[in-house]
Length: 244
Length: 379
Image (tube, rainbow over all chains, first blue to last red; front, top):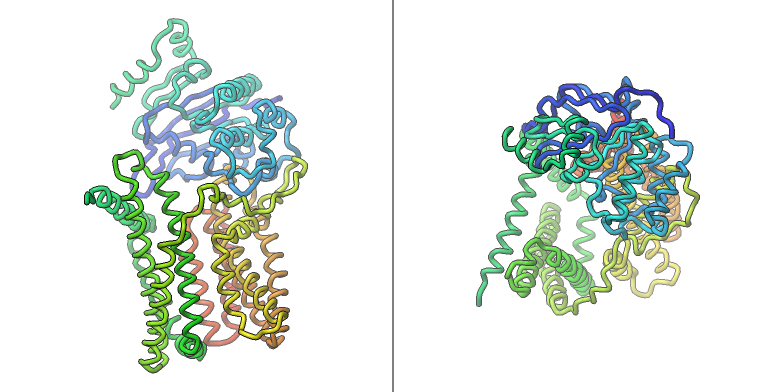
């Protein structure tokens, strides 16, 4: 795997979004450099998923600018985007193999990378390739979502609670794969409630509250927490309390 | 008898209905837009009713029902019976997954509320059908005695079907099946990028819709529509025609539904709108063309005129393209398409009933407008 030199995997400047009259994002500023694992934390309804939907094009920001892989347009940016959709968004009447083929064609890839097939094998997904998605369990659907997100060596991998329903072995395999990807220059943007992932894998994290980024933990902050054996859960709870 | 459980379940149902209505109301872009849509829809339905009432076909249909009271009653009873059996299975599955299943509400309360809901639905369906038919016939100036006989016939059929349906034995849980069970499994292809899966998806949806629990009603209607003493060829042609009509309608309905689901899933990719739309519609279009050719052949073999068969085929193709264009555009924008589609179909039918051929032109214009709009607004 080799990534082209790109300073920022994603640049989010003063992004606002709303559902009808309800303002959900109120001026988000974030820059995630290539090669970084960034975690987005926050209580339910803080706007994490909406921010990810702005990146994927499901929601149009009412204000602000989003640039993926420093591309001039959103369409160009999407060429470098890997997004793990929610398991219930997968098409029930396609097989896993058809899903991979369609998604690869939609991303205009010439072929499906051998490492995706190898990852499917490692995740023990191969026996499900020719079964319809509507017969899959939640964990199996989640594996397919991850395989789709990793297709085509994306520069920015966007995941929304992507480890829900996965067995510990599969979750560990995917976390290691994501570590390999970040080492090769991809950035991971993960919205999660799992502080364990932040403590062990993330290089940076941010806490969102009421549509704003209220607190950021830099790489050195997280390294310090790891070194001192500090309680990250307590730190997040304290930050939430202080800001709300 | 303690009816607290039933009360809670009925309240939960009522609240979900109110919530659904509120979502529709708030989902509209503006209250004015919603009101305008309702006014247009009402006007269109009224105009369509008046236009339909002018047709002699309404008179013929009511007279046929009156003359075939037994058959109408049996058809109504079978329709009600299959509706009740299907709805009961749906509500049983729903109550098994209910968020209230772990509360101390007795299992019997779930069954009672299900029975109330089914009874209300059957009553409403029968009332709407009877009132619509009688209203159309009354506009057409038909005798009151005949209308009463038709209404009684439908009501008796409905009550008979409901009585049998309520005693019908429950199917075993193992009989429950997912949609894909009746869809032909694709041959394992090579894992290489291709949009072929997207093209097959609407077809798979249409085939899945025809699983036995849905298609048995259609089969019954088809069987009863074969006239007594008909030749084997005529019977086969009628059954083929019913099957084809049902498949083509299911396919036309599947395209907008799939467009929305596919857009949810594929929107984060760079797939161009034109490629998305073409992939969705290409296989469905081939099936529509082949199906309509077969249907026209069946119609001609039953004694229909060639010109009329070609005209109907053309009208359907143009309508299918219009439904697909509206559905794919709205689906890609993650917006619902049913109201817009319904209004467009009504408009086309009204115009076509006024001047033959103009409806086709209107449908073509609507299709082109949506295709052009989609290509312009692609982001």
